[in-house]
Amino acid sequence: MERLMGLDVGDKTIGVAVSDLLMITAQGVTTIKRTNMKNDVRELKQIISEYHVTKIVAGLPKMLDGTVGIQGEKVLNFLEKVSTHIDLPIELEDERFTTSISEKMLIDADVKRKKRKEVIDKLAAVHILSSYMQRTAKRAK
Image (cartoon, rainbow, N blue to C red; front, top):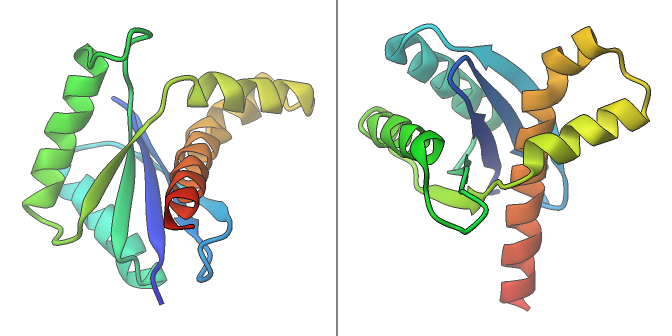
């Protein structure tokens, strides 16, 4: 069975989500506190092993006009380094607005600011992975 892992890569954290075995839903797993590349990769490998992940879907932050800006370049650089340590296909998913959508959902649910900071990256990873699964499911039909 194929299982996907969604990533919301930031400068300080990486939000992580995984798909269910039927690839219908995405669930938030954790938020990795970034320390250095070695530890980041180790934590990703542990999640990949635990959930039997076969593909990584990473959010690519783009500018409003669709171009890749500074943050997008940082994500691409990180993913390039990850690919030298983890032998899985990596797909990119446009992540414009995922963090703001996630924050609005949490505010609407009356989640306190401190708690929002703890879960927002994980929720953004869920949105990235869900968007990818919906888009690819439509293409498969």
